[in-house]
Amino acid sequence: MPWLTRGLREGIVTTRYPHRPDGYGASFAGHVVCEPGALGAEAEAAAAACPTGAIEVGRTGARLDQGRCVLCGRCCQVAPRWFRLRPGFETAALSREALVVPESAADRRAIAQAREELRQRVRALRRSVHLRHVDAGSDGSEEWEIAALTGPIYDVQRLGIFFTASPRHADVLLVTGVGTAAMRGPLRLTYEAMPAPKAVVAVGTDAISGGLAGGTYASGTGVASVVPVDVLVPGSPPSPFSVLHGILLAVGLVGERQREQLPGKSRSEEVAG
Ligand code: SF4
Image (cartoon, rainbow, N blue to C red; front, side):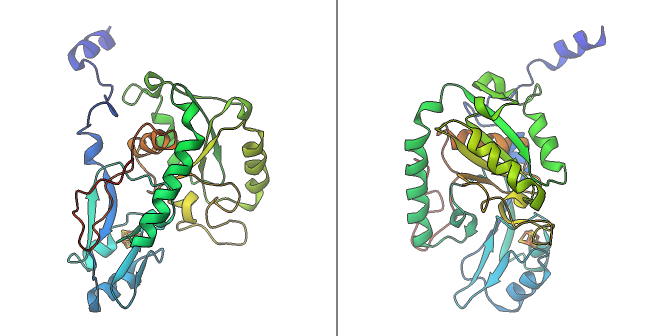
């Protein structure tokens, strides 16, 4: 019975997140951040090196769209002064604007409004949540991370989170993939079959913006044009911890991560409500 001795030796492996911080989750590659005022040849070279066009250099500095970033790390190599890969997993956001860094004051207002609207809508879902997952043209990587959620490390059932095969029983729709032409109809039908209140979580950069594979004759640039997305989980793929954070964010059980620095604001300013 090697499994018995191994179990006794390793003890409880299940994470305590979100009740306690998790050091294992904090070691994942989280997101790339861009320093305010990133200008010059280095910033331009980083934008040119980005395979998904996630970096735009404007008059006052570069802005980086984490919803298009596939975490390849090229910009961090080309312009380490301006771009850095930050570890962690609380990367999900409540609006598309929140994924563009450094954020502006207008973004901050849009984020606050999105947070309040979602909070009002999903108030009834906090005790038990049923998830329906739809693959709308994924490369399969997000599915591996979602499948891990039911394993012993993450064990989402301990939080009252369950997967269901029927949209009629679902509260939260998890969507992966670029939103292929063939999957647009089934995805829309699944969403319409879910009872209210409901929330939609776009899992992965492909589902948010199309990533590397979007924008072809057969694929869209994310799923937001098909179903109304409430929470966006960037990453290619995002870690299971990031997906879990997105689900908990959708039902109001955790807040957003600390946002990037604004001029005159502390980096530790907490935006979460
Ligand atoms: S890490 Fe992200 S932003 Fe940087 S080059 Fe790669 S895809 Fe572009």
